[in-house]
Structure formats: structure tokens, C-alpha cells
Image 1 (cartoon, rainbow, N blue to C red):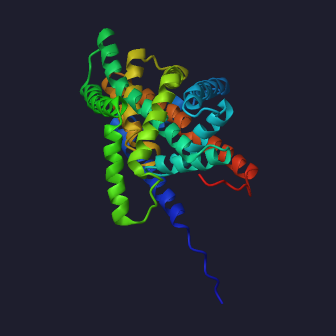
Image 2 (cartoon, rainbow, N blue to C red):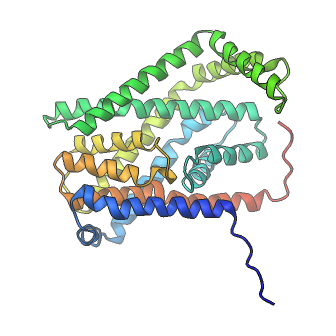
Image 3 (cartoon, helix red, strand yellow):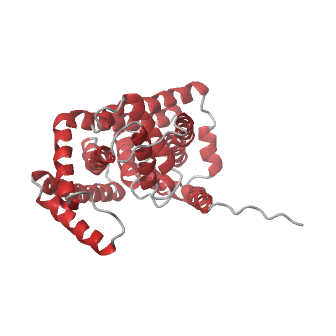
Length: 343
């Protein structure tokens, strides 16, 4: 009698399909966008030495570490080591699937709960850290546009488009933050909407006093955190972005490509914006095509442009999966059987 194979979990199928789609985009479209064959790109990458890879790894790890003050400032009591663990494990989970940020946040929430943090405290942490990160992404294209102009380099349409999109999103975000920050009216209105929805659906139990009161309390506590920790939040995120940009520049240096720092800055700014379009895992494929297109448009040779971007993404995206996976696995082993108290 033939044995039946166990069905493949639906999640595994989704991971395989999304990963294959991202790889397919890169394999087929990247040479066309760059104007270089894969053999030429591989030839550029073939000259890397072990010492150069170690240097890039050190810069990548340093970038992860300098961000920890931003994460600890948004969650009082969080240590730098645990902040690094949250960063790595969240990236590991979110990089495995399209729109994986929400899944990564859930994984981080589980970790924070085992360390004794409340759901509300973690929620503030997630909102504040993502808000600062998002606002910085919106600012970067405009800064890149100014830098290119100051360097006397011709600004291409792709960079200008990213700058205008970033400016529009930044304006909308700042307006939304201002409405929330000035008083409780905006969040109370949102809370009342949530209360009405919950009463009709009757699927989720609202917090005591309703969502309107909860939202007002959440806003006030978040404002206190920002008042006391905004310097570390912004400084940590800026330092992280700066070292990521340095890593991108070094990726070109180690393959022997002379790329103007302003051009590197433009490619980095476009990458930061495109990572938000996470319809593939980590926006893989979309990011690489966008970065290479900008670099080639700004005068970088085709094969080095593609090789430098692939090397950079191998660290900023690829390395986070095995390293974050190992960290997540170690945490699971240490916390096996631990009971999480109700929030």
C-alpha cells in the first residue's frame, strides 16, 4: 500500500513562491536594466577577497549596533543586547515573505512579552521606532537631490521622482503627526470609530473605557517617551542610515568601481523608498532594479553598478536571514515552555 506524502504547509508554499518570484525578477530583469550580462557581473564580483568581505561584515554589524539606542529609548528597560535581538529576529521573519513586516512585529511582540513588557509598551515601541524610520526614508530623496545638485551632477528623472514622492509622503506624515501630537482630538476620533466598529462586529473585546480613552492615554504616554528620548531615537536611526550608506559606498570600492558619493547617496535614498514596496520579500527585485537603474542613469558602468548593488543587498537583506534565524532559534530554545503572562 502506497504511503501518502504529508501535505506541504501553506506558509512554506507561499515562501517558495514569493522567493522564486523575487529571484526570477532579478535573474531576468536585472541584466536588461543594467545593460550587462550575468557573466560580466559575476566577473566583477569574482575578485573579492576574504579581507574585503570581513570589512563589509564589520560595517554591517556596526550599523545594526548603533541603531540600538533608538530602540532602547522607545522601550524603557530594554537592553541594547535585546534591542539588537529584536532587530535581527524581526528582519529575519519579515524578509521571508511579502508584506512580512506585520509578521515580524508579531514575533517581536512575543519576545518582548517573555521579557516582561506589556502589550501597550511594545505597541508604543513599534509605533515610535517605525515612525522615525519612515520619516527618515521620506527625507533622504530630497537630501540626495540637493547633494547631486551641489556636486554639479546632472539629476535624472528617477531621482527627481523619488524626491517628489518622498516630499509628498513626508508632508502628509508630518501633518498626521502634528494632528496627533497637538492634542487628543484626532486620536479620540479614531478611537470612537474603532469603538463603533467593534460594537457592530462583536469579535474583539474593547479595552476598559473604550478605544477612545485608550488612544488618548496611548498618545500621552508616547509623547512623554518622545520628549525624553527623541535625541536617541533620531540619533540612532541616523547613525544606522549613515553606516548603511557607507556600506553601499564600500561595496563599490571593494570591486574597484569609482562612484561619486553623491551618486551613492542617490541610490541609497531610492533603495530606502523602494523597501516600502514589500510586495516581494524585502522588496527584493524591485529594490535592485531601482538602484541599478539610478546608478546607470547617473553614469556608473553597467556591470559594476549591478555587482555593487547585489553585494550590498547580500548584506543588508540576505545576511539578516541566516543571522536573524540563528538568533531567533536560540531565543526559542531558551524560552521553551515559558508561560507568557496576560497583557
